[in-house]
Image (cartoon, rainbow, N blue to C red; front, side):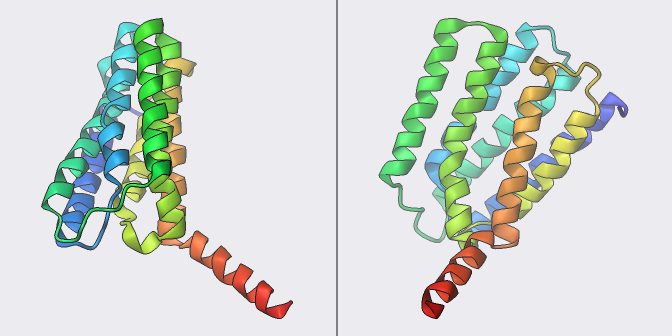
Amino acid sequence: MIDQNWVFLAVAINLVGAIIYSYSVVKGNTRPNRVTWFILSFAPLLAFAAMMLQGVSFRESVFTLETGISPLIIFISTFFAKQPKWEITRFDLTCGALSIFGFLLWIILKEGNIAITFAIAADGLAFLPTLVKAFRYPETESPWAFMMGTVAALIALAIITTWDYKHVAFPMYILVADILATLFIFFKIGKYIHVNKSKETLLR
């Protein structure tokens, strides 16, 4: 464990990543999925509220709060983009609807750990369209927000003093999601797999 004040560095890193990503959106180099970033701004806020209600300290939960602020910044940036917005598909809308259903379950159940679970599920479903897009079309995404988010999540986990579900679940989910997005965008794994499959087809 490191000093809990390091979490504010994690928050700063995440904010910088969101600003860099937003700048790329405005310049037209990145075409984000609006459904993803709009819904992603809600799930962490619900998880943050649930953590606070269960007595998690502000320092141990502020990272979760910030992961709701950054998507909101990115969502707003899409309205100033030079390129047309990413076309919303039925898959995107389905994930968004399921995500909202998760929020409704949280409101109905009102139990801390269940709230965190549904917040993670809702966030994950909202993020899935962007993850699929990053896998198939990595050139339409910027890796920097996700790379910096990975570092920030590691710092957030390192300050935790009590390793139980309510403290660890959301930061751990963010870490896994950011690592996957970084791998898909930076290393173009989807394109690599597609090329290899095409070569195998030609050789048959």
